[in-house]
Length: 228
Image 1 (cartoon, rainbow, N blue to C red):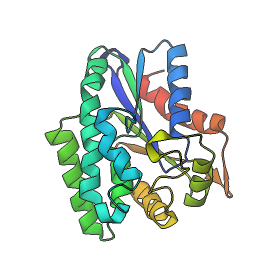
Image 2: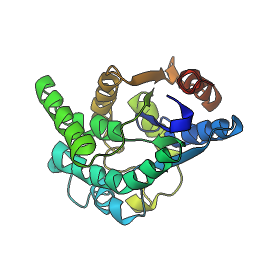
Image 3: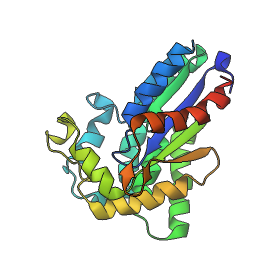
Image 4: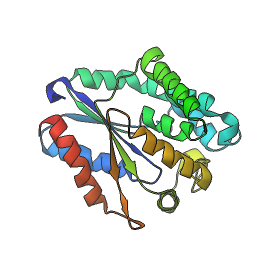
């Protein structure tokens, strides 16, 4: 990736893995290195484009399984389409963009609802066609997948502050379901084996690494990609 032409870096991973924190640490460090940057958070909570996502996550449409993988994915895809114009503008300005979640988040949580291997691949191909084909959103140059175990995920989620999109409760319908989180964990690990992804383990012996250690592991992947 050449920074003069811009580039898109995705920080994704299991719930509670500190994605937003790592995006902030990474963007601060890139700025210190003199890199022009922009950052995006998905979903874009509070914007019209994320309305269906917010309703889905607070249970307005029923359980996650009742909504299903395909319907739920469209909610998130529309939100990214809305952001894609600003992303493309920043890329054309030569900025390096760091996003908290992207298409991979759709894959992780929605593939968790599909048990059959062939059906998961069919879904993945369909989703890529929707997001990168029909909606034509920019493709990432580097995708980093952070991994923590489901039990630690729930604990870290509970440590978060007030979140308006779920009415102030601690967990959304994904986070509240440990069975879903376990299946999503396996889906994320499966996705991390795909080309263009790098898996970063954030837990050892049942304990999560400090944010500084995780940030340094991310930097060892990002810096060579950007030629820093």
